[in-house]
Image (cartoon, rainbow, N blue to C red; front, side, top):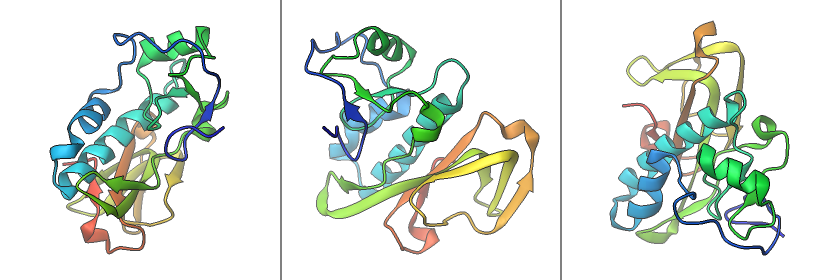
Amino acid sequence: NKGGNGGGLKSGNGQPMAAGLSILNSYCAQFRDGRSIMTQDSEMTMLAQCMSQDCQQAIAPKIGCRWTDALRLCYAPSGQAWCDYHPDSSSCYSLNDDVDNNWKPIQSIAAASDPNFKYGCTCMKKCTYSKKSKTLRCSDSYTKAGLDDNPWGNSIINDGEKSRECVCACGQPNAAADTWMYSVK
């Protein structure tokens, strides 16, 4: 069956992960634990930062993001290792084996403050972004993941040093780019 928010496949109903192992990346933990008291813009910004961290983990050699929680947030390396050994755990949602090709940011979620306000995210793998100049700096092998929206603008500079970085933005589909919240300051 499907797990979470358009997330991975649920592998089983086994024992849940111990609380100390279900560690998420820092921005994802802040998103999960604090979104109920955030403004919509703050919530979208925090999710963009979370998705950027998860994206970087997904493209990192030997770590990846094969396993997520029910919200489709990547477990940190300790949780990844635990789920590798306990794939039938009720806490482990699988993105299957080819993690980089399967990881995508959350594409549809309701704001905690208003369930009718739906938004999602898009990420540029192997890129950074300057909001001031509206310019992406990307390695040759960059890819886009998530919503089809383009809040980035059209300027891309080739930069091979960006092969382990990601930039993400969250907003309402088809909304103006200036209403989107970015993972960069």
